[in-house]
Every structure is written in structure tokens, then in C-alpha cells.
Amino acid sequence: MHLNAPPRSARTGDGPMDLNAVRDVSRAISAAHLFIYLVPETAEEAAELGVTGGPTYLAFRSAAMGAVPWQVTLAAFYNFSPRAVRAMAGVWDAAPPERWQAARFQAAGRAMRRVDVHLTDDHLAEARSLIDPVVAGADYAGKVLAAANASVALPLDPLVALWQQITVAREWRGDAHLVVLAHNGLGPCDCLVLHTATGRLPTALARATRQWDDEEWNAATARLVARGWLDSHGMVTDAGRAARERIEVETDEHCTALWAPIGNAGVRRFTSLIAPIANAFTAAGTFQAVRGQPDLA
Image 1 (cartoon, rainbow, N blue to C red):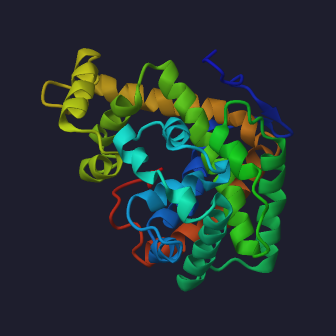
Image 2 (image 1 turned 45 degrees about the vertical axis):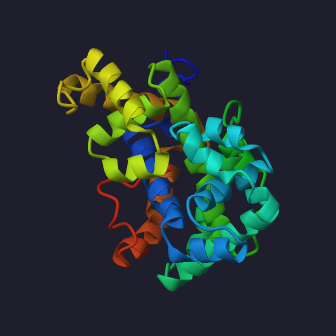
Image 3 (image 1 turned 180 degrees about the vertical axis):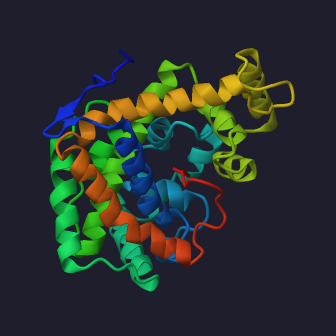
């Protein structure tokens, strides 16, 4: 069994959890969550708080943890360089975390209505009936960002409240993924280099946002070459692709326990119900800057 992973056969009322269903819902929640980092409403709300640029992402995403020092955010986010996260020092002086969280909800609601995310009242209620027991029943041991988001009071806006529950599930998988990365000996820069080499995240975007310098990036590349996961030109090898997929499967295995309360049928239905969120932002061109499966955070 993998470190900290639940049994492969996590069972529900309709049998063992299907890893394909777990992978599909993970992709759906990632896509439904991602827009918050890309839409103009987020920058506008941050500007109202007196902050612009890179620190806005860091502040918005870590606000649920409270007024933590930047070193805590660095630990929770994992694949950012210290120089990138150090830039957020002072954001809690501009506004307390509670105001950042409220501004994040405001940005999410404004953006979803601008692109006309359409979920009927019945579909919102059904989606909540599925995600709420998942959030309530989750084991948050070692899941720092997920636990922090689960502790945030849900807003009155039903659409934004659903989005926040999606955020909890997204951060839960992210927290689990970090355990798997560490268990596989992939440090913060190494995992980013491998991720970009597989084409899932543009290298230029990763370098600009995570801010690893050339020496650090080259050292991580050399370590992956030594493992046989990249070739001498920094291109991903078959072994590297297999290793990256194995890490994803291990993460999926870890997540079977998260989704077990609603079973395979519930997971598939929830995946379908939240699809209009990502679809609306895709139609609006929000994700054009990111190739492939959205996974910035």
C-alpha cells in the first residue's frame, strides 16, 4: 500500500470506487475552480484592497488559513520558490484575510455571472446534496489547505457556496498529491520540471509564476535526467511519463476515500452537474493561455 493512501478497494454502496470516476471528478473540480486565478474580476477585487500583481494569487488562495506568515503559504503551496512567495509579505497589512476571502467570493460570483454559468436551482440543490457529505465526511489529517477552506463560512450566494465546496475538494486532492510527490522523492522544483516536460503546463508560465531561477531549474532537470525520467535534452522519457502517471494514479487511490460517501454513481452525477461552470469559462476564452488540462494551482 502507498504511504498514507487508503486501500484501493475503498467501498461504497455501489461497490469499490472506480478510479476512472475519481480521475474524472478530479478533472472536473479542477476545471470548475481554476477560473478564479485567470479572470479580471479577481485582479479588480484585489486592487480594491490595495494589492496588485503576483501577491494577489498568494493572498487569495491562502486567505482561508488566516494571517499566516509567507513561510506557511510556501509550505502549503509546495512547488513555488521562496522568492515567489516572499512577495506576499505585507498583504495582511493591506487587508485582513477575512476581507481577502470575502473579495474572492465576490470575484467568483461576478465572474460566473459575467460568463453566464447556468445552473438551475434544482441542479444547485442536487450538486450540494452530493458535495456536502463529501466535505463533511472528509479526513483532513495532513490536508492543510482543504481543512482551511472547509472552515470558511459559506456565502449566501448559492452558486458561490457551491464553488467554495468545490474548492475544498480541489484543495483536498492537491494536499493528497503533495504527500504522493514527497513519497516519490519529487521536491518542489523537480515536480514542476517534470510536470512541464509532460506538456501539462507551459514552461514559460511555470517559470514566471513559481520563479525558480536557472540554476535551480537546471539542477532539478539534472536530478530527473539521473533518474531516467528526462533525457539529456530535458525531454520526458517513457519512464518519466510512466512515473508521472503512476503518481496521478496513487493520488487517485488516495482520493477514493474522499468520494466514497456518495459512491460511483454520485461521483459521476456530480461531475456532470458542475460541468457548466468550466464550459462557460471555456466558451468565454478564459483558459486559452493554458494548454491541456487546467492545473495551475
